[in-house]
Length: 90
Image (tube, rainbow, N blue to C red):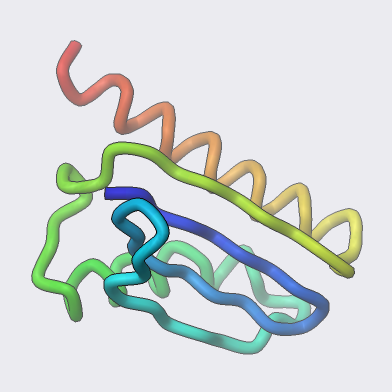
């Protein structure tokens, strides 16, 4: 299962994907509060899909037409989440 974080301009989307198939998704507005919104949106997505963080195997992050800080926040969350996933079996 892949967790995808996508930011395009002022729209955010987190989704769960299996191959090319999107299994669940949540969209949200991105203003100056992405750092406060992103993890709760991921938690809500997993809850709605009836999944746990441990069900996620990989994290992808895509940003287009987003500001520098927005891209860095999305990338930092994706990296930290991916790192946590890699440490779950350690």
